[in-house]
Image 1 (tube, rainbow, N blue to C red):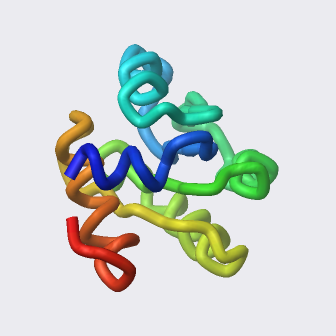
Image 2: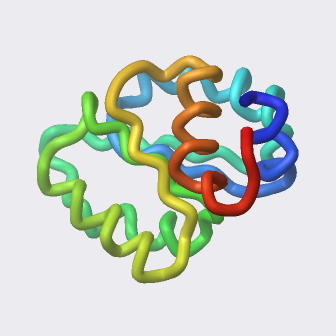
Length: 115
């Protein structure tokens, strides 16, 4: 799954929605493994407004929504990303590379190719 996801993600911009900068230690791991052009994971604190992420969605190719680490109001950002034609991955649990690759393959690539 990682290989299939990497083939599609290489050079793209990935945005994680949810969590905090404390989880951002995985940034280098994601950048290297998937050969991303850019990886953004903004620190969305309790007082952050979902609208603050809209410019980042516009720049991203792929948006991953981390349910476990998000407030319900962030769901509107997923809808915005989809309305802009972005590839959207909903992560229900776990942040490791295999879980992300599996979710990406199942949710984005499922109609285009088998993983």
